[in-house]
Length: 361
Image (cartoon, rainbow, N blue to C red; front, side, top):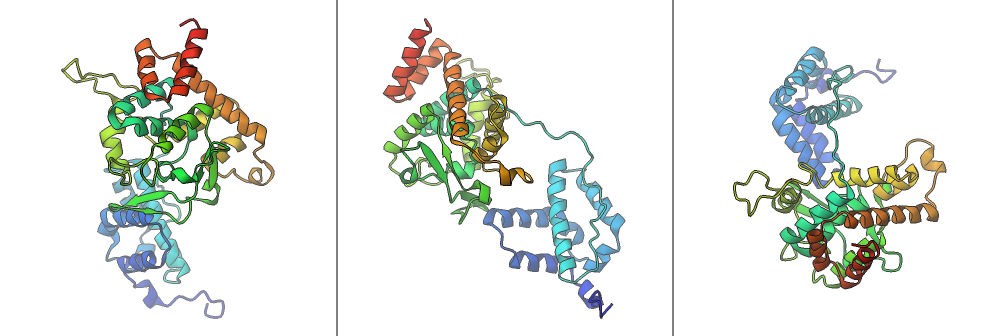
């Protein structure tokens, strides 16, 4: 075993799990939000079970590991259990590579029940527009534009709130994704790079959205296009609680008819704007390579090597998104349309009015 370099010093296996996990965290290159997530999972779900266990004892107790996973299912959602176990497995695999233990005890552990995954919500264009109108009342013009940017660009929250007006490409009507903001443990910082190489991209805006965004950044007094009331960075949890949830969920149970509002699409999240964007493009028969590129995804296998986005594909994306906007405006009630005309820039308001007259409305 020594000659084949498979021998492991027994004393190494006596290392406490908590000590090895802390050492692994200290030498891993993790984003601030990722480290905060890992530490939370360790503190709340992993260390209460394994903190003082020697690594080798965990290896020799496969059934104990399975029992722990089963207990997690009693109090956590299946997706959370999978995330917690993934971290535990990663640490144990690191212990194998560090020659602390001969093998990982995570092999063969059943983590999920095999049940159906949670279904993602997909909004219609008119639902997005109606939510944006509510956002205009709740969070002003920037909230109106941000809601539309979410669904019509498919960009991540971190990618949108990091936008600098000065980096906008006015010639090609596109926003860059370069250094998204990330939040963890009450801190917000600018990431040195996007989430993945594929995430570094330009996102072209359809004509109506380019008009709305340019009107926003033309009057923006702050470093970033989307900020808090005094120019500070937007925090996802605060934004969701104060603006996003009231806009989408409404207030249907209020006893006061003056403030009672119906839900538009209850439970719809900001991240589901990405699902909505990709679903719209698939419904409009946009090639997968163009859909993936817009959302910052990498195609699997050889498709990523041999398939490329053409200018015609890019134009088709803009055309179908513009058509969805036009359709959503046509579906508004007269009162909703008057509300919209008070919000949008004059040139876009004139276009909307002309289209309504041409349609005999």
